[in-house]
Image 1 (tube, rainbow, N blue to C red):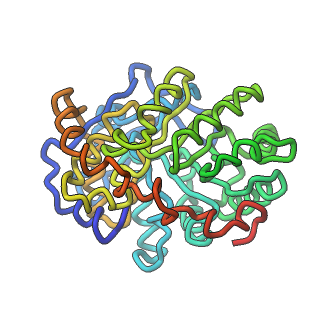
Image 2: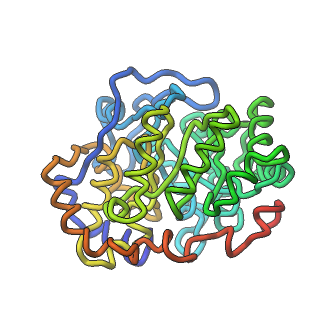
Length: 363
């Protein structure tokens, strides 16, 4: 999300009634093998009491991650925002991550290429002194070959200061050639399977934001290879429902196959808000009302964190009437994808701008 628009607007909005989600939470949280924990117990209060969840609220804010058996916080802390040095100092970023953990946000997102590695480095510092055991840690790799992916993974492990990453995902499946490359004999999938066997990662997924047909092609390639992804990350927002819809085309497949759903771009990195037809709180409420395991969001200030924690601890799903009203209101603005630039332009295509990331572990 754009810091200049989406998060600033988000912080100014009233959170009265701001919450929504639909998910399965009937099972009691289970303790995961080290280092990824079961839903954490109550911890010391965060600096402001409004962000401190009760034990019941903390449990209610957990969701099951597909078929992994892991419970994770419904909101995830995005690694891109936390690594921006023009917004946060190292100390500020670390304090913000600690406050997020204390408040119950325990799904941490990252990527090998975010902020030229600074995002992983900061997160690694924040996860020292026992904090690593309190989070479910995810990062993403760009390399399409086994050699590139293995080298990138080793760099990520070093930056994150951990021996094992809970979830590693293939980043930016945004080309129809990606599935073939990933599942080739010398592709990234084989490297991730080897790393999992070696105990360096626990679960495997993929991400993408361009076209649902690319996601479906990746899922088909996995099926043909006798492989099943643990998670899939994709844009889920109120405008996606009208144009090249991941919600309509991919989400049902993931639900049927028991794959964990990671939502992103609930506000289209701020572009959706520029339409003027929907508010930040409506965007978030819509995304959280879908059957997601996690909705990953950018958190770059204490004010944003406080708003997100309130959202997570108090949420109520959209009613059918509210959902229909939102979809009707956004239909015209969403029709051509002009507010979902991650689908219609290269603005957010990091590996298109840096194709060497696909081939080597060099930023």
